[in-house]
Image (cartoon, rainbow, N blue to C red; front, side, top):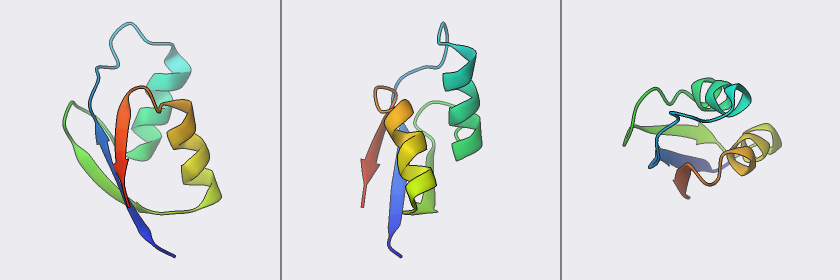
Length: 58
């Protein structure tokens, strides 16, 4: 599987708790932090839920 880089570009302040928990599950704890994950259907679904808060690079 290929790797995907996920960077948080918007704050989680004043967001629904489910979106905050999704960011934490992805490993994103603060702004402009980048994490790398395998591109799986589970990760893709999590990215889709917080797409307005993150950017992705394959």
